[in-house]
Image (cartoon, rainbow over all chains, first blue to last red; front, side):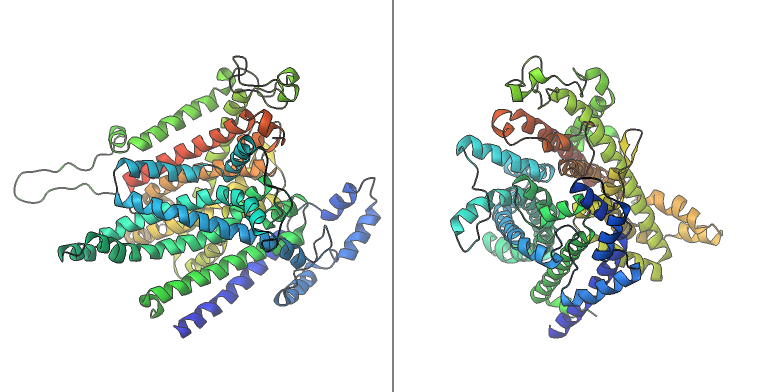
Length: 318
Length: 304
C-alpha cells in the first residue's frame, strides 16, 4: 500500500508542472490590456507614456521568458505574483475567499449525498415501478435545471414565505454557526441538487449492474436473506464507482459555484474567477486556474488512494 | 451496434435482424420520443420566430414595464413583459434561435474535432497516442464552465452574421477532450479490424483511412455524445450569458434575460425570472431525454 501511495503521489508532480507551464503560455495570448482598462476606468484620458510607466512598474514589459522564470521560481514558494487589479498578492486574494467556497462545497456535498443515496437506491431496487420513473425524471431534471436559476427560485421562495433574505455579509462559521448555516444552506442546495442527481443516477446504474452479477445469483441461490444480499453483496460493491463520482463532482463543484456565488452575491473564489476575467486580471486568473487544477489533482489522489484501500486488486497492479 | 442475427441452426426459424426504424424508436423509447417531439417544436419556433412571436423581441414599451407597475402576464403579453416592457414570450421564441444555433454549432464543432483527435490518436498509437491522452487528462481536470470562461478570456469578442463565434468556440472546446476519449476507446477496436489493414495494404494515406474507414464506424457514439452535448451547450450558453460573458444585448438569450433581473423584480415581477429559466430547463431536459434514449437504443454499454 505504501509503495503504491508513494508512486501515486509522485505522479502528481509532473501533472502540476505541465498545468503551470500551459496556463502561463495560454494566458499570455490574451489580447486585452489590463493596464489600459484599469487606467481608463479611473477616468480621463490616459497618455501612452503613463501606460508604459504603469506596465514597467508591474513588470509587464519584461521579456516573456523572464516573466516565466520569475513565475516558475515563485510557484514552489506559494508565490503566485500580484493581482494586477488590486495589487495584493494573488495568494492572499485567494486565501481570503477560498474558505467560504470550501465550506459551500462541503455543505453541497453533504446535501447531495443525503438526497442521492435514498433516491438512487430506491430507484434501483424498485426498477420499472412508478417510483423509479418519478425518481429518474427528477434526476434528469436535476441535470437540466440551471443551478443559478434554481438559486433565483429559492430566493424568490424565501421572499414569498419568510419575507426576507438570509442576512448579507459573511459571518464566520465559528463566530455564529447558525447564521452562517442559514446563509449558506440555500446556495448549497441550489448547487447540491444537480450534484445529487448525478450521484443518484450513478448509484442506480451501478447497483443495477452489481445486482446482475453472478455472485449475487449465487448468494440468492444459497438462500441468503434478500436484505443481506442487497446490503452486503450489492451495495458495498456498488459504492466504489459512486465514491469516484462523489469525489470528481466535488472537484468540479467550482463550476457550479462560479454562477451560484454570483446569484447569492457571495464573495467566494467562483465570483473572484468571473471578476478576474471581466477585469482582464491575468495574474489572478492564472493563480485561480492553478488552484483549481491543484485541487482536482489532490482530490483525484485521495479518491485513488481510497480506492486502493478499498480494493486490494488496484494496489497490486504493475 | 447490434449485428443482424442470422440463425444457423438446422430448424428453419429465422430471427429478424434488429430493425432500426423511426417507429421502433418511438415504441421502445417513449421518453426519448417525447424529447425529440419537444426538440422539433423548439426548432420550428426558432426557425419561424419572426412569424410566430407576437411582438418584435426588441420592441421597447415602457408603459408595459414592471417598473411602472405593468408587465404582468395578460392577453397583451401572455408571459408578461420585462424591465423595458419587451414581450417575454417573443424574447423566449427568439432566444430559442440563439440557444439552439449556439448549442448545435458548438456541439457539432466540439464533437467533430474531438472525434478526429480520438480516431487519429487510436490510429497512430504509440507516442502520439500517449501524448494526446496526457493532454486530454489535463483538460479534463477542469470543470467545463471554467474551461469555457478561460477561452472567453483568450478570444476577443467576434460576431459574424449575428452569431457569436467566440462564444461557440468557448463552449465547443470543453467538449473536445471528453469526445476524444470516448471516440478513441471505440476507435481502438475499429483499427484492429481487417478492413483497416486492407486499406493500409492498399497504400491509402492515413488521412483517407481515418476519415473514410474509421470515422464512419464510430458514428453511433458520435451521435449520442453530440445530442448530450447540445443540451449541455445550451446550459453553458445560458450560464455564460447570465454572467455577462456570453452573448450581449440586444441579442435575445435566455441566460441574458435572467442576468438583467433587478433585485426588486424578485417580488414584483416573478415572471421575468420563471419563464426564461423554464425555457432553458425544458430545452436541456428534452435533449437529455432524447440523448439518454438514443444511447439505450444504439449502444447501451457506452459510458459517457
